[in-house]
Length: 368
Ligand SMILES: Cc1ncc(COP(=O)(O)O)c(C=O)c1O
Image 1 (cartoon, protein in one colour):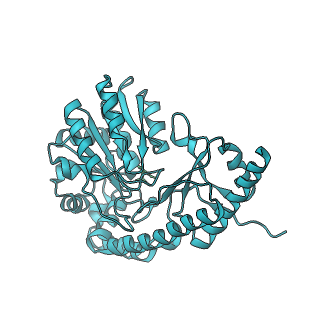
Image 2: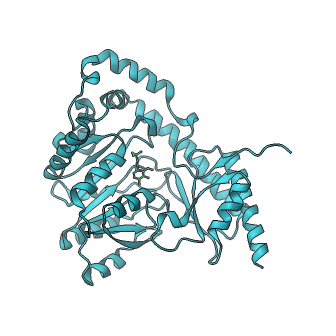
Image 3: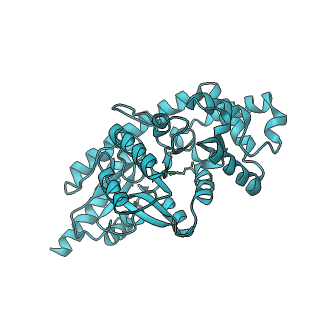
């Protein structure tokens, strides 16, 4: 029997064919040529100056409101460590990024999970929790093409969240690594922009999804005092982030290569998103999903009672992996799954979903 190709619908990472390897290599050459001393030195904890200047222009904020870190995960870790003490209440979306849940659990936060709707977090449910006495320190929100659900926060809800954060005095942690990857529809302003310099917003983004994750460059933008505290913690943790990587990213951005890279990634991901939706409609008509307008992921709800663990095993036996819905929730999600279409070409997506559907039919048959 011919061996099955393994198909990963689990990894939220780009496939190599959409990483701009040659342009990155050229940017690295130019960066070493231009500033060999600066990029091989320790540098300073806020990050490589040329990158901070580019980010400062991009976001229209002073450089002292920015810190560039080793991936945005590092930024998240600093932020949580500064703001969250054991017992502090933190609002998250349900479902949300699994690593956020892990980090908050490790810190001993009291997690309040608010359901996600097709247009983002259910702000009425959040308002209800606040009226009932919840006093969060922080609300973690992934506004665009959410991981894992693929949905996007509407403009009205962005405004409402800002109002609630002002009224109840909590910080919005706007975690936005997918913002550049919109395939269609209208781009909404970030809550960072809507809230202005004095807003209660700390914004995070990353080059992992627009250049490549291995470069490990992400950043935070926030109020000057909050960023100063995080910069201090960064110095104490690692002296400075990876200057070589940040100098290459700065050159890649300044030269405009990033625009080409984003265009390539978007075009490929749009095709992969379409292939995923078509394959689901064709092979798995029981699947309910919100069509993502961008990003890497799609969330699938199967009929209640579907055993997600058994489906996972059945798919694995057929050479396909995905992430179980339960990984992204404190409770529930047993009959849901996250499909990442970022790492797989369209023909393999079709094949992968056909195999998942085969496993599903076997389960449904066994249950009947
Ligand atoms: C919502 C969210 N935040 C943060 C990250 C971490 O990104 P980075 O590679 O910049 O550390 C990811 C990566 O998948 C993510 O989905």
